[in-house]
Length: 507
Image (tube, rainbow, N blue to C red; front, top):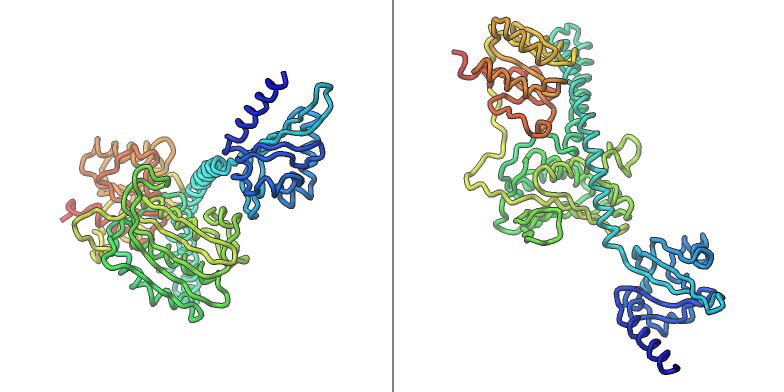
């Protein structure tokens, strides 16, 4: 009998010692460690000689010990038959890991407590994956909210800017004209904020073309230095022959300037900002949010204050800012994040408190063989024909009224409709206008759907689609052939859209 019990005990010990993915050890009734398996040594860093005889609260954080969690854990296990919880635990070197902990009571044949069996498992990777999913869902929800807000603000700003433009033209008193100019500048700043909201929600309109990153940064050096002041030194380091990236050059300039300003603000006493770029390859099966392929990694690195883990986790959330009241909108990094995602890349932030921050812009390498210009074509100077009749379609009365006002100030005859169905009725009755300007986001019938109906019933009738979004909802409605007009728009932009829409149909 003795031999049989000895063999069972030996097999049990061999089993416990063979397990290296779990920390399995025994405690006496007071919580003192009485045994230690190789898995515990690997997970927590202590050898058996170092840890046996010490209290298991050694592995708990200072906050957990202050709250009495170790003693409550033993009490729960004794009274309820098991204690199980997840939480932070400490290794010998002081680093933390997220652990799943199980404590079971051990009793003798008479039912008296003689100790506890404790199993600890490192589930840091699982927790990180869950947090990544939660963060992605949160960002998606916030993106939908901000996109909707930006659309509503764009409508308001379209009405405000249109009325201000006409008022500015009609102002006789110079003092009044100056006040209107100030109001226009304020509205334009509001429009810039909506663009940042749309950038975060990936709904801004981008012009994606091959961009020489080195040339772009070199061309911005003077602007960057003027922006950040003389206390900051800018260093650039680029390899020879760096591939071009596929992105929107204007938006990338704005993103880069934003990152440099953030870096400056992290170094109030001055310092150095280093801008570098290198080619990176993401292979199949590599753990990354990016698909396999070649990328240009543009890095802005500072030697400033850095961020703690919580600040770093929230840094790209809209409206989150560590700057004082009135000194930041909290939309800068959100805008950069949205630009990267919409361009097929990503923004990566790396930071340690007291050791600076690196912001990495991962941009896909451009595959287009033909050389393309990086600058928008110069706007046409030709004025639109003044004898045109224009049908304006918008469900927002303010936008409808102001668009009509802008067109009539250009000398146009106007017709109005507050819905797609009403617009079709106007067209059926005739006579047909020369061009149609329609909003996209309308109830019952969107502007894209209206365009399809017009193309089917009245082929060749030019349509201008006014929208604040980069893409149509669900991507199901084709607008090929329609002229896009981004909200909020000025009278000049409206005029250029009319010229583009009627090109080839007049004269």
